[in-house]
Length: 293
Image (tube, rainbow, N blue to C red; front, top):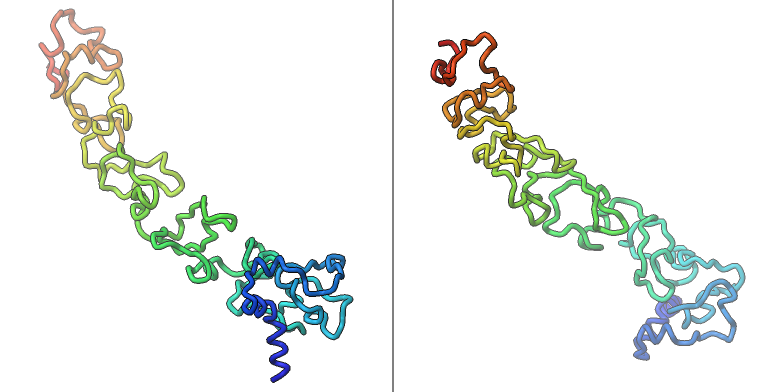
């Protein structure tokens, strides 16, 4: 029983000092070491924090001074002769030295280094040990490091491969950028036209378009009538198809000018060279369904 008490007392000596004396951790760290006037810095191991108030024999077991290890893990390990605090069982799995993340003053983490950590991010970033996915995170079976870096969560390089759900579940203007106000009116899903590599260029699928052609093909949102287009009040779909502009199914019913304005051989065929001389307009003799009289 006595031996157990001695080990306990040595292990928690500095904590007992704090509780009994009412000193703060900061005051304890600033307190002079309860050792001789020997300058411990000359050994290559500076006494900082709780180390400053330890008795010499708490580290120098059996009066051994020369050749003691200087690495934290050499003392703060389950196999050590020194009854010091050790890694808890739920500690992050890492091959890094204690001082990689902890300071000599307290066990509180002062800087975190992922380089020695083994296992996937989710082992720690599970919202229990460390912050993990927020409730509105993109639905994905990706590992954290598929998109995020160990330096910072943001910005992230995004990988769509393991996402579940439709594009709109994220690209809704809240979670991620969605349709802009002047987007084509359409009931299509995003991926009917856009790819996960980039929004533009897009392959347009007209099957879900709910407006007429001119609502988009007006020269602003999308290419519309060019300057040499026939003068007509027909809507685009009267002549053109959604698969291609050309060839066009031509209808004269909406043409608003006379025949010669188009049939002038530039470029639409007009009067041939052997046409009889006449000052009649085309429509005086010909029909819009055929040239033959």
